[in-house]
Amino acid sequence: MKTETMIEEKENTAMNIIKKGRGELFTDPDPDHARIFFRKKSRKMVNKSMTLTKAIETFVHDGDYLAMGGFGGNRSPIAACHEILRQGRRNMGFAGHTASHEFEILSAGEVFDRVDAAYIVGLEARGLSPCARRYMQTGKVKVTEWTNYCISARLRAAAMGVPFVPTRNLLGTDTFEYSGSIIVECPYTGKKLALQPALYPDVAIIHVHESDVYGNCRIRGILKSDNDLARAAKRTIITCERLISNEEIRRDPSETTIPYFLVDAVCEVPYGNYPGNMVYEYFSDEEHLREWLKAEEDPEVFKEFLQRNIYDCKDHHEYINRNGGMEKILKLRTIEHLLHKEADK
Image: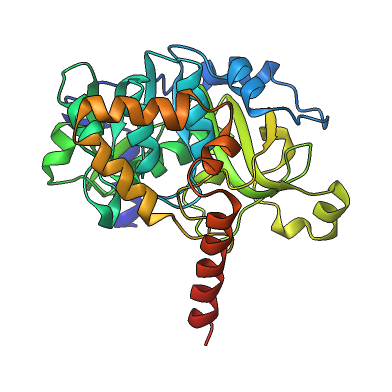
């Protein structure tokens, strides 16, 4: 009885805001505002296959807020990053969730001017990107800090259609001070909670293993928050290693990670994460990634490197051909398969 009385008293008290982070929110967390867009979005099961060039032209605009799938160097939409540079996108927002090589590429093109930063600049065990570091130190980019889990929670809130989700992370950290989070007193328990505001990207780009032409996708290995990202984003572009039939999708619906009604474009881009790692498909090209880092040390050398590897390439296949072609890809596929064979022993 005493517990019920305490809960009733708490319910009759307005939520007490204890502290606010000083970080700027770059997106609107209001689910009703997002719903105005989603209400008009087509849910038809129609053929959405198109070239990557057309998908970027149609769905990625200057000033948009962009988020990308994958985890670190694994399953990132690298081909799409190259195409964004070729098309000269600018003034975008970006969710630096677990961003590594994709952040390096977008920094090289100065694509974004505001970033929700959780993991950026670093290329995991390979070290820091000199290019990304230089760009972030220019003062051209507004930054609000979060943790990886914060951005996952923000995408989950958007996927749920609520303006925030309460968490217990960030409490007592300096990261909170530079975040857009708010610490409140729980109306049920009186405990401190950090509210993570919903994140609705204008556009998401997610690289997957397989998709049909309608956008039913299969992802193998680590998922991160890509299922929530596809639900949170106003527009979703899928790049896939291969297109498969809808009959194959229907054969085992439990393997469908992202359903068609969340997807706006499907682009078949084999080896679309090269030079990154695509689990069960091909290992990362560590030699070429070292070339990136070395070239970045000298801005003039790096400018020539980008011209040769991105701007002078008509598409991702030409980029691969300039860096070893199918011979290199087959070696990377062999490494990946051997690693999984050893892991299965």
